[in-house]
Image (cartoon, rainbow, N blue to C red; front, side, top):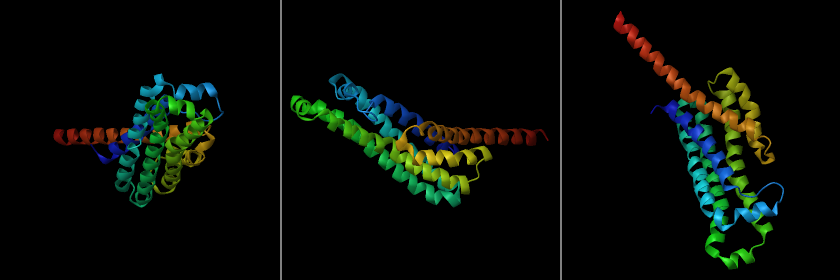
Length: 213
C-alpha cells in the first residue's frame, strides 16, 4: 500500500468510525435529558455502547496512519502534523474509554451503582467523554488543517476549504461546526486515495505507450 493511499484511508477510517461510534454510544451531552441518560446506562444498552465505543477508539488510530504518512507526503508540514495526530489519537482514545467506562461501571456495579450515582453525574461524565472523544482530536486536526493550508501541495479548493474547516475543528465544542470539519477531512482522505489511483492509471498508460513504440 502506498504512502498516499495509507494517508487517505487513515482519514476515511477516522471520520466514518468516529461518527458511527459517537452516534452509536449515544453518550449524553448538550441539553440535559433524563430519558437519554437513563437509556445510556440501561442494561440493554451495554453491548451496543461497548461495541460502538471500541469502534470509535480503533478508528482514532487512523489519525496515526495519516500523520505518519504526512511526514513523507509533505516534508515541510509533516513534522508538525505528525505530533498533532499523535495528540489527537491519544485524546480520542481516552474519551472513548471514558464514555464506554460509564456504561461498563453501571453494568458491573449493579444495583449499588445504579442507585448511588445520580443521573446528573452520569451526564457530566458523558459530556466530558464526548468532548475528549470528538472535540479533542478535532482541535488537533483543525490546527493541522491550517498548517496544511499554508504548506502542503493541495489543490486550491482543498486549501481554501482547509481554513474554515480547521477553525470549525478547533471550535467543535459548539457542535454546529461538525459538518464543515468532518466533510473536509473526509474529502481530503478521498482525494488522497483517488490521487493515488489516478497516478497508478497514468503510470500504466505510460508503460503501455512505451511498449507500443
